[in-house]
Amino acid sequence: MNLIKVQLNKMSLVEKNIIADNSIDWKDLGNGVRRKVMFYDKKMMLVKFEFKKDAVGALHNHPHLQLSYVASGVFEFNLGGEKKIIREGDVYNVPSGIQHGIICLEAGTLIDVFNPIRQDFLEN
Amino acid sequence: MNLIKVQLNKMSLVEKNIIADNSIDWKDLGNGVRRKVMFYDKKMMLVKFEFKKDAVGALHNHPHLQLSYVASGVFEFNLGGEKKIIREGDVYNVPSGIQHGIICLEAGTLIDVFNPIRQDFLEN
Image 1 (spheres, chains in turn brown, yellow):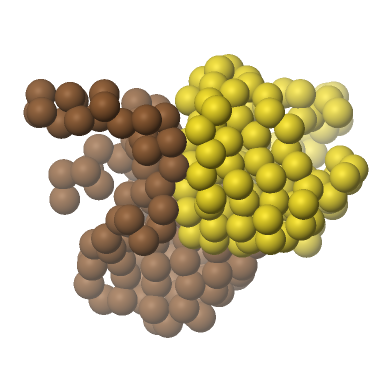
Image 2: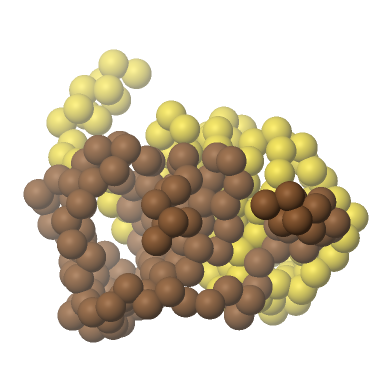
């Protein structure tokens, strides 16, 4: 841990804060879903999720605020029991504690920003 | 103001929290740059910026945390005096108070998330 801190301290501003897409490996979550934690600090985290057609993000909820951008694809998004079709360029917000889930209708990528960070994504 | 609050209270979760790209108009900032404030609440704001080739986001700084996703295009990003080329799929973080700016090398779109919200974007 101290070694990691020393390495981080040696990194320049750009090395710490600009993250090339190809510098982070995907983590396969199974069933057509994978994710990359692209960046996090004390307050905010940005995570990229990739869905194959028909992949499902099961209904769940968390206290963290979530603000998301649909980078590509088409999805049926369920927020608190209401459903809406979302597609490239759209944005959605998940208030703290609200149940939400997603079904991928056309393969695509979601960009999720969390506040505070999803500690569980760093452990699993 | 009360009328706006009443209207907001009548909106469903989905109406308040899912924002279709085509439901928000661009604000032209001149010199090949325009922006859309897609969503904000008390803590976080998501803003879409579109740059034409050679457009410039002048060096500036703000206390707000900023976490950004390159949705398309190629840019030269300057963070605290260091420069790096960023492109579609890359992510960058701007720590509070750090000077930053951008030059667009190939037309594209940036997705900026701020915490706290940029009140100045709501007033201008």
